[in-house]
Amino acid sequence: MRIGYGWDSHEFKSGVPLKIGGIELPYDKGLSGHSDGDVLLHALTDALLGAVAAGDIGGYFPPSDPKWKGADSVIFLQEALKQVHRAGYTVGNVDSTLILAEPKIGPHAATIQKRVAGLLGIKPNQVGVKAKTPEGMGTDNAAIAHVAVLLVVAPKARRKPAPRKARKR
Ligand code: MG
Image (tube, rainbow, N blue to C red; front, side, top):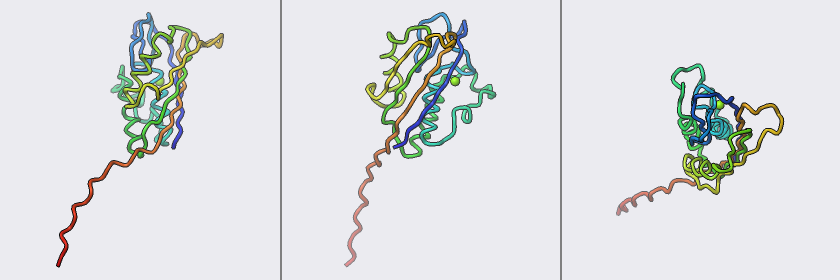
């Protein structure tokens, strides 16, 4: 087993869609960032990479590279998942906490859960999605995400039995 942890934060900005957990939420502001600003997928990407000690999101997708401008963060997650599989692991479960003043995540939590599970190839009951407000911490204009993952050793692919050699007489 391996454990991984990731954290991310992005500031709210007008005029961009709000992407959290790979879905677009109805809100008048989105998250600023070089990519689509999906704070949850970024924290998840880092948690997966961290679990297999494979670096961090910035190492694979440097914000200085114009190639990733406005990029769909699903691409980042898929790379991290590839590293997890390459290391011989599969995702056991994920737990996450979002911290943001607005919008309310509760009504969308099940959709986010399903989407994240789909992206990871696991079941929704293997993905925890929790949310809370900053409660006067001064981060009302930002969204923060914390993610923990547990990886388990991937079951070995069933090998076909080797054909029996004809016995020499
Ligand atoms: Mg980020």
